[in-house]
Length: 206
Ligand SMILES: C[S@@+](CC[C@H](N)C(=O)[O-])C[C@H]1O[C@@H](n2cnc3c(N)ncnc32)[C@H](O)[C@@H]1O
Image 1 (cartoon, rainbow, N blue to C red):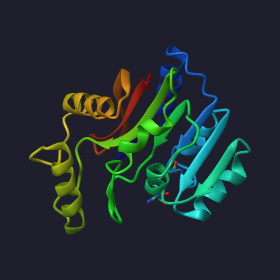
Image 2 (image 1 turned 135 degrees about the vertical axis):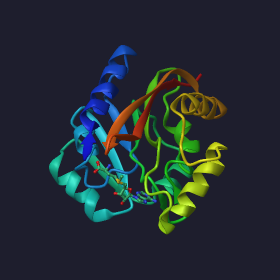
Image 3 (image 1 turned 90 degrees about the vertical axis):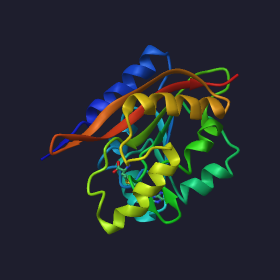
Image 4 (image 1 turned 45 degrees about the horizontal axis):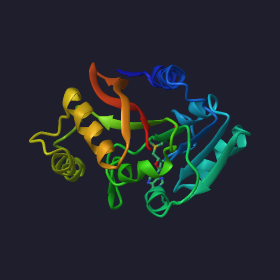
């Protein structure tokens, strides 16, 4: 049985933003898809939202449903790597939970998160993490588990949540960000396995 906690994650984003006086005026989602799982709900909480996805058809569907949504069809990792534009209140990565093309989870895009963070004002960053991957012995998952071991420096595919909090705090500090708060929020249970979380963090830069 699968239990979704997507709405709880979005409520937590709103609540943390509120606690830290982040206004929810502007947001960017790097993997918006058609929004049916998460991004459309998040868009409904933000005054002006930009969504990116490599799949043009999916993003156009979300754009038709939400007048406060602008869509850019692109490879998000390339977009972030070359970005030199404005900063956002809410920065969200609803990344695929696997290897996709030359990329894996948020591993390739997170290093560019700092480019989207406000200067002298706080932003909230949200991204997906896998706590305990399932079907790890399937041939199609072997490369993914190996990449996870390398990225986290762990010996199994499982990511301890306490370790994850210090690991990502350090990753964000290495980008020159100040981390004010960072928490893991459960997003999905699969047969009682809490395999899928979101990291939500309040950051800033001088
Ligand atoms: C987890 S799904 C997103 C679900 C969506 N946020 C929602 O609320 O329904 C991941 C998305 O990443 C997109 N994607 C995969 N590779 C990408 C890339 N390199 N750049 C941008 N989007 C990509 C896929 O097209 C897919 O829509």
